[in-house]
Image 1: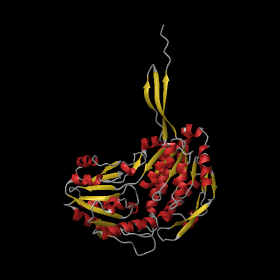
Image 2: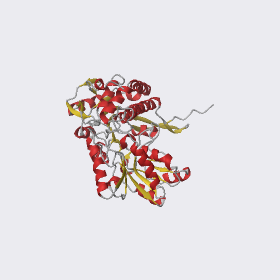
Image 3: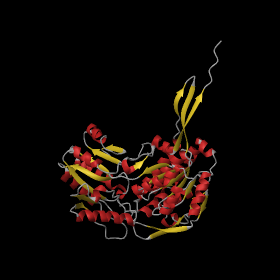
Image 4: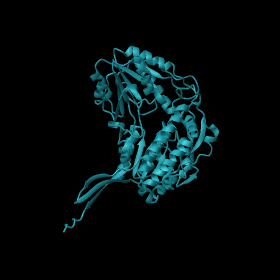
Amino acid sequence: MANKSIVLRDLRLLIDGALVPGAESVAVINPATGETLVDAPMVSRAQLDQAVAAALDVPRIWGRDEALRRQSLSQAADIVSAHVAELATILCLEIGLPYKLAEMETGAAVAFLRYRASGKASIDTIADDEKQRIYVRRIPVGVTGAILPWNAPLLIAAEKLSTAVAAGNSVVMKPSPLAPLTVLRLGMLLRDVFPSGVFNTVPGGDQLGKALVAHPKVGMISFTGSIAAGQSIMAASSPGLKRLSLELGGNDAAIVLPDVDIRKVARRLFTGAFFRTGQICAAIKRLYVHESIMSELLAEMKTVAEGTVLGDPFDPATTMGPLANRPQFERVENLVSASLAAGGKAVAGGHALDRPGNFYAPTLVVGLSDKAPLVAEEQFGPALPVLSFAKVEDAIEAANGTVYGLGGSVWTSDVEQGIDIASQLRSGTAWVNQHGIVLPHIPFGGVNLSGLGRANGAVGLDSYSELQTISVSLPPKAPVS
């Protein structure tokens, strides 16, 4: 790992290829200690306008030279790979991610950059005969406003940046004021990789986000965050008919059939729910277990929960860190408290740790109905409601009984039955005997209120592109004499 004091020194914004101080600042809190890490620079509205103007002024060759863009992404991947320790250290400090997982996130960011660097824009041939030639090509949207959440800032920054750049766009990226540090450092590291104006970092709060969405020169908004914010973005972007890519979280259900090997799946289910302290959109957030194995599975998962080590993210023994910020800690604490007051029972956890920081014990709650807030809402933290079912049809109905629709999974020894049940889930992704697998080449996104469009894979690139049809009438061939 890198020196903790050095990695936070003199963080700057990247605007129009220059590293500049912010017009304002905000205190970033270490979630493991509750202490202020640093006052991070934030942009003013004037600096946002400057960043958008620079992104708009990128030479047209950028959108036409695919080889240059791929070379730039490859170079960016090399630079991030060479700074894993530094970036992982910042992730640990600002969101409380255990260092091993922070290294994983940095490695995943490299993978996204390399994936887009190795890809090639496709051209769809519709007709090619003696009379006509018709094909569809991908062209840039223009300026992409990328708005990031606080839970996985480096990974999501790499995904949005790499896809936008691969499509020939320029990027104005707004990290969350709760977790701006890693993205600021990323901008500093990549300063000389892209032409001036292609990549700009503009951290700020909600008002800055609204200004970015409403900016008349921004052609696309790529957003990851809450349903309410996504709905506001969709409404605010409608006058300009901006292109949108919205990933709005989920309330993923996992259905466990009675034929599973309980000891084998217990730890995997726990990981699916509590990985990264449960603060990922594609975590298991509701667990439906067949009544015949409910007690035994709960006992196994309780053992895993009680063996979890919460502590200093830099301690190699730590397996779970704190919640990333105080508002999210309080949300989880309130949801669990309300569930217990309403008759739910905590089989494991159910309480905060008596120590500084945002530490909350991994919690398993039973005795709730589908209407209980911990079940119906996205808790986004280390608290999992576990419910039983007698008929698989009832479990499917319950899993689909939500406004969300990001992911879901089925756990069974009968793979074909698992596939059949998975195909009945109303979700953007349905996994069988696994959960939350998100990779650069696999399309990812939600249905219902979980989002609009898809990230990753070829379809993800299309989300950042306009489709242009070229239709050519060919002259008649001269008759052969």
